[in-house]
Length: 214
Ligand code: TMP
Image (cartoon, rainbow, N blue to C red; front, side):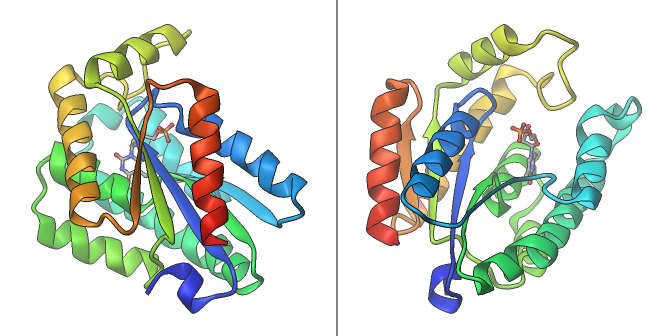
């Protein structure tokens, strides 16, 4: 059951590799929806709560995090998610708000499952435990080729690349393939957007698709 079938609110999630443009699209969509009078919450993973942001720091920026095992990484992403779901998402959905979330459980399926090769049983079980039954109403995948993703990240970085940004092209290819595989297996939930298209075109497509769901 999707969030919107169970609660008055809606959950729209945005996925894609680094530099795919999802964060910009979320900001544009939030402005449009708020302008129409909707109550919108923008949040992100890992993060979105005080505890989640501390976990984000540990996962992404901590100086010792190159020693982190894939299993510890999986559990930390799940911990941040469990906190966000219970502290922010469930109350907002009950109040009828629209949540736009920058990454959600599909990031774990793809990054820890497909790219880090943790087997699907623990990934799926831990994801389900963390989200407490919340399934996004719709998930946009901003799809960009791995080479383009890396090039965009390099252009954006002004400081040292973070732990995830240091990954190589094979990792980014697995991430992209993982997302496209998910989209093919659940076409009713996923909407793939060509992240190399003009920002304005994608903005219009995303808004139109969301409006059909609310
Ligand atoms: P971003 O949200 O700024 O793109 O950075 C978050 C990074 O964390 C990104 O490299 C994807 C990664 N990530 C995972 O590996 N698993 C997850 O479950 C989530 C939410 C993010």
